[in-house]
Length: 181
Length: 376
Ligand code: SF4
Ligand code: SF4
Image 1: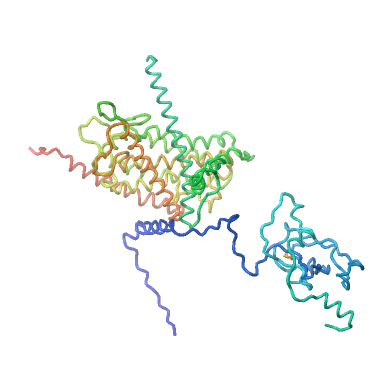
Image 2: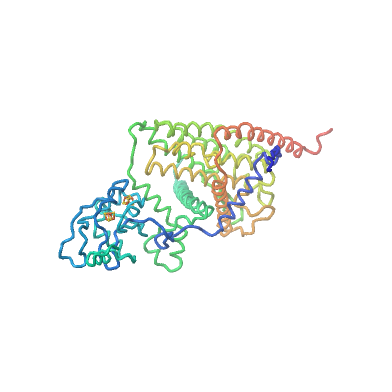
């Protein structure tokens, strides 16, 4: 069993009480620090290495077929703590070949980056895996309007995500062949 | 008193020298701000300011990027920033004293350098005369008298700001200055006892006399280490440097006495603080480090011509710069004392130590100066 040992605190010696030797030690430490390697990252020229699960600016992504994944369910709008997301739902026109069997898509999708707190809830809640917080971290603008990312901007930032689900292909197959996937 | 042409010439020369000296001290103050930023950065593993550069210098190969990396142009940018910032005067201040305070802080710092010898000049016969704006017989007394006026700037700023934190800063600084002034004065008395030769015509209070007494002899730092230590500690306190930056102590008093100041008025306070450091370092160099003379026990290796003059001034500046570095080095090493600890150190440690030191040297000097044939 571990025994508690109470250490006797020795009274300070005379030289210790003048503080001078301690100051000299401190000076030595700081002086030697001057020649150590610098840790500064020269930011705009050198970029930081982002960790794998970094949460940057939220973006909308397309599936490998280049179709928009978001079905405008508005769950992300609902869950977003600072209410940064605003979605105007719309329906997909019947004649759009590659998006058959999907009823809805956002007409407009805005994320206000002045409100967003990068919490990642939207990504977590999305049933379609359509919204992702990617690596982009430096967003700036001269006006408040510039800081609201609209749908086009969101897709531009997000791009295409290589996921293997092909959900809508499956959906189409299922509908045509009457086979629940 | 007649104004003939020779006198006018003399006056013109003095004015020119004064201008030169003010610009030298101000430049040094500006660059010690840069040095502070750079040294603190290096000590903390950072690189410090390295972005500012003049447009045409940038394109000089090697030298341009090197100067940019050193941040040589940063003080310019800092100064411009202070000039062009919006001047905000809070509504609750006492306007007259509010405007006066920065000047009251700066003027003493710049006045003390008039009696500061920084080199010597040789005429054709090889006689040396000191380079100094005003060779006062009581130089050191003048410095004490004027430099302690600097505290008024801080007290005025603290009081006229009409707000809590500056007020506390002002009170602290006046208490601190009064406490350390005493120890500082007492620490120098043994120096004058030591330097003044009995029966000599020279006034021992003259800074030139002190410097010349250290020529090819021991530096007073070696002869009187305790005095030097007390003087140095008191100097830190007088210039409000860490670990004695009670009036500012940004962690407990926001910005201290200059909390309510902005733009150029803050800039003046800032420059005044660094001018104090520059002049303080120069005074320490003069008194304890042999001024413009070479190393202790070694006669000046340079010839007694204008080359020697220049080298001497350079040597003096080098010592001063080393001391400024020491100031900065201490700042980034030692944490701030608590207010009561500062008072405690000043009154119960430094003051008695200075008194004991004085008594010891009085006895020593009396014993050494005994005329050999006193006993009948
Ligand atoms: S990351 Fe959080 S705050 Fe930003 S849009 Fe998504 S849910 Fe809203
Ligand atoms: S991004 Fe996802 S959660 Fe938000 S509306 Fe679209 S499908 Fe729903």
